[in-house]
Image 1 (tube, rainbow, N blue to C red):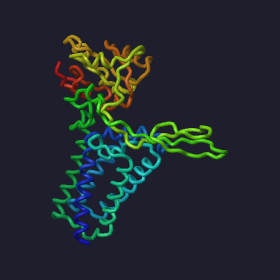
Image 2: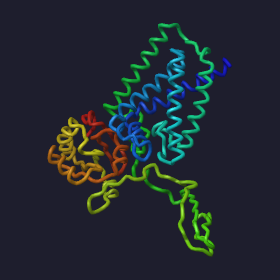
Image 3: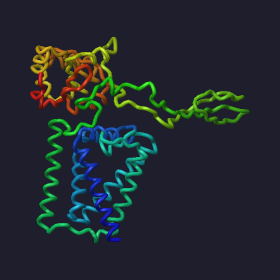
Length: 364
């Protein structure tokens, strides 16, 4: 039992640290995932949405710290109880999400590793078993150092996690796992190869045959049935090839301008998923920044999901001299983890990115 507990301790501790650190690297992204869970379509806890960012920071810091606590043997009973409560909560979330097909990606490993809801639930069940082993053998979890060094390491882990979370919120994630990272070419990330695997769909057709409803399953073809058609349900068996970027577009009121702007050699996109929620200090910086960029030959545009009236209002309030085009809110949030944020492209390839706090770091 002793050796099983130690193996469970090492595996669980490392996994919690890795999972927590990946999310701590991008707490804003994890908060967006929590907003999905809190929404009316999932848990119907919309009153928690305004607090999603704070909750995300607390959860991921706690996740990293508990992993460290477990490895060094700091307060074993508190640590194991906390791990148990956390994994029970996450197991419920992932099961609910998988069973009712509500959230396609749990966000357990941020953008570094995408898991389906059932994969996430399976991972949580494995962790639950390991933590139950730790719970049963908690007496075998001993500190690996004396009391003072153990306490110091625990405190340093807590403070370091808080600092790192604050740092990336005030700047950008230290490691960018998204398809909009520096060096990525957006048109290439959106492209679907000609030989790409096609999605596999299953169709369940319902017909009224001799007064009774009967179902017929096909791979898409209309079944030859002597009866009255009632309806059809479609199930995705295999999604096939899915491009890294799916919903990115730059649209005016009249047309889609994505291709036009992706061909520009010197393009700056200022992202504001909601112009009315932009950080006031950041919005004030945009005027001088965009003026300087235009002076240096850049094409400057804004991307936002906000409506025409809000866009016009914000342009007037801050005397902005660039047009703001329509883009899906979730996409804008993904491009740059800041509101506002800046991304620089050369013929569709990302060359620079910055949080509004770091506009002076953009080389024009």
